[in-house]
Length: 289
Image 1: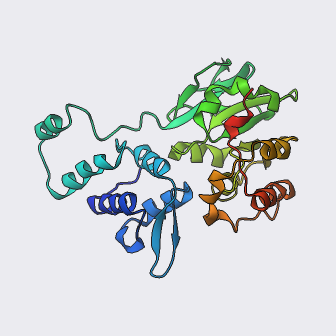
Image 2: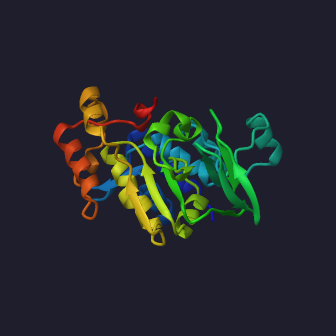
């Protein structure tokens, strides 16, 4: 169910985007704030507690995922005004040039792709998903997707990677069946619900940085209670690639995750320790061939 965002909460969001922080008490919706935290948009620190902006595009994505057409900070004024001074339908149309500001949940669902033809059960009928270059297949939340027990789900953070998954085929050379699902910053309720019901094997393909590890450990794993197995994708040559690129800019923006640890996954902890030691990161797109 989408979250209803009030005018007061939109005011708090506007201050957060303008000042990069806002008092936690400004947010009247705990559910909304929890959603921002779960999607790594913000973090809370200090006394009195302040909400600090971590990722503006992700925050706007969460707002859109809940049905509000917001592309930038200027779009917030409409919802603030609407809450304070109800206006007519004609006034809305005139002011926004007939553009609807409240989106439907039409795009609440799963964006998927494959590297090889894959048999699925869709709405109780056997069908096939075929590899698509530069695009993905969108499955609406009202539909029913069933897959065989031996199909491995690959959760991918960046939608562009899903659309161009053939460029990453070299990472999945084992003779296994894979279904790639976009688990992007524009998360929807259905993505989470579907993961919570999944009982097979899940592999997380994210960025090789502290934020990526945090998404996997604190957002994805809690949704995988029924999964028989899950792991974080770490290619054999990842350390060599990261040292060669020696990209340090993003690390400085992720210091709020510097205390993150993986107690149950030695390989992921090894990656986290490596990132902290050398202060370098790598976006998943850099593995494209």
